[in-house]
Length: 155
Image (cartoon, rainbow, N blue to C red; front, side):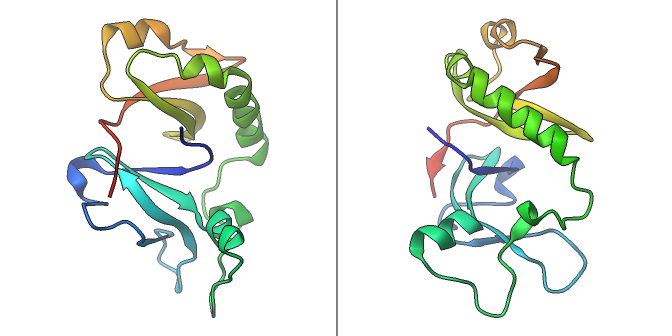
């Protein structure tokens, strides 16, 4: 079960491939230097999975030298969605998390963006009619999106 991880599209393994575990994930920005966001550890040919860098540093009781490790959660990220929308999506995800884990072929769920909307994403190995029928359009007003991520394995 993944809790609190970062999922990034990995279409055709263009972002993460075998052997990339332990790689640092940084912001995709033009400013220098980009901030650390996460530490990659798993994925599929459709999605890459990272632990938030703040959690990693806290767990290891270390700090980054010469760079900010605050990452996206610092609130300074360009184009960040409103915190109130993210907080509402997080509450919905927590409230319905156990039910979302029962979606056929499901591998997890998270909070993400669909265009500019903050949504709850339900990750499945592949999208089937059964999975489509099991996923609601929204939960308490927060849109829910079904996303095929393939089989997630450690890289």
